[in-house]
Length: 290
Image (cartoon, rainbow, N blue to C red; front, side, top):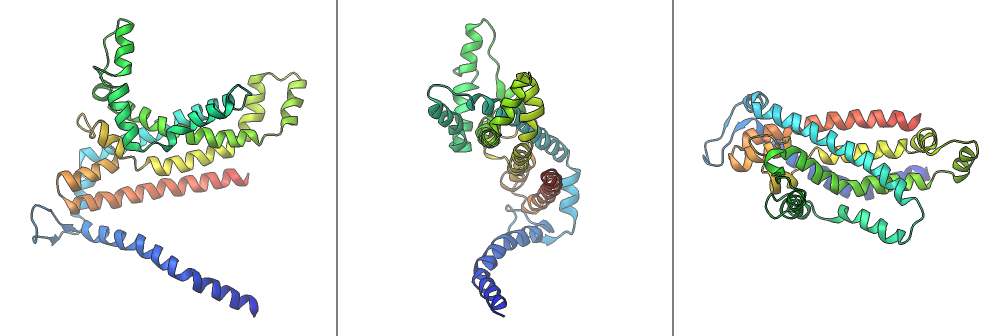
């Protein structure tokens, strides 16, 4: 009986925060769903009308949607590839004893604390600028013509910027997993004649599998909604070459003032993101249970 009273009291104390969180999530989602069924343009106030699934039909049949969807997937896959491989490499490097190891670790992790807009501006103006950027100076010093990264390879440029931001996170998770590896196991393998490559493939990499899956899960959830880096650097262009789903919804709402179409796009993006998240959670859950 006492246990029942304790559970009831705990639920009663948790109720306000749960209700607040529920309302905070459900109310905006409900309004978005409601607007997605309306012909609602900010340039024509008072002329809203119910259109059913017409906004969804227009959004899904828009050629820009397929370009944005492919760009979103390429962005996620590209950043994951760079951060996972780079994170493992940096973790192996930082795990070695060296002079000033603490300072080096701080410097490696520092980019994760830089705001996305700031890092995008730094990369745009200080590194990728075709006139005054560092890459342009290096190219001219070597006798090559500078490349306008944001105009010729916009999506790859955004991938590099975002990967630079997320690489410290991956490195930190990988390094934590690497430091939990039993030293006696590595020493035993070394005494048996296993080289660095063999130890890495058969001991280190399997031990880091869970850390890798955690990095993939967390980064994927956040990378599906990358926005600031695209807005600051390329504005989704040229054309739709660097437009992802998040930026497409923004353009629909605040550049074309089509709230109905943007709301439909937002719901589509939420559904796709949840499908990816559920798939990854189940995949990673099986991996962690193994």
